[in-house]
Image 1: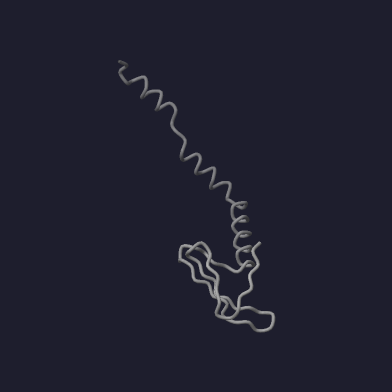
Image 2: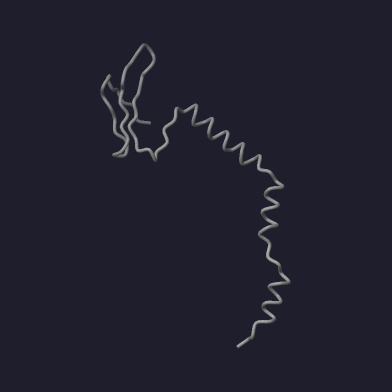
Length: 91
């Protein structure tokens, strides 16, 4: 971990395209401003962890019947394929 000391109005740059600015300090609270491309998600850690937890829960609660229906809709009619092969002239 890199630990830095910054004062109000000072900033750090991450990867040439993210700037973290110290906007203010009040007691034990530090107000930060973050300038980053819109394509980079920026979350407080507790929100990020909540998103990850909800995503994991969603994947674990997949509707098994929906998955089975998807599988059955993708099955190939083997008899139709065999007939097609049989009816195709061989060189």
